[in-house]
Length: 104
Image (cartoon, rainbow, N blue to C red; front, side, top):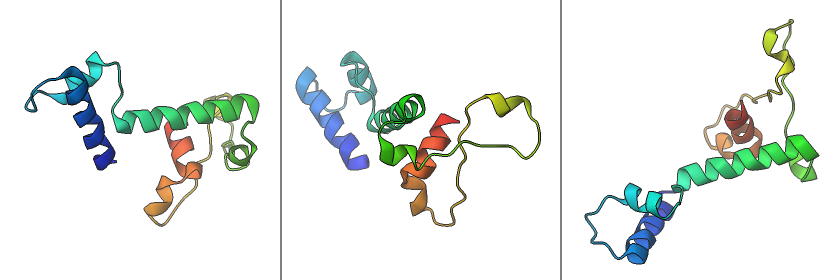
């Protein structure tokens, strides 16, 4: 993601025609752009909302499961998603882990 962020920062400098030492966050705000990290988080959260509301796309609706607590809790009425336990760090990049982490 760092390479994509550098490309976005360079494009912002080119579009606004500012010298390089200028802080990029102000340029992205001026252009109404999110940084790459926040854009990816927004996209995952938006897809999760569509899956929960419409069950579309189907291949993602089969991945997400609702969290059911073992005992009666006040939070059981909230539509919380179950976060799978993963032993590898690379597994946390998948939709089955990232979507519930952002949604909850």
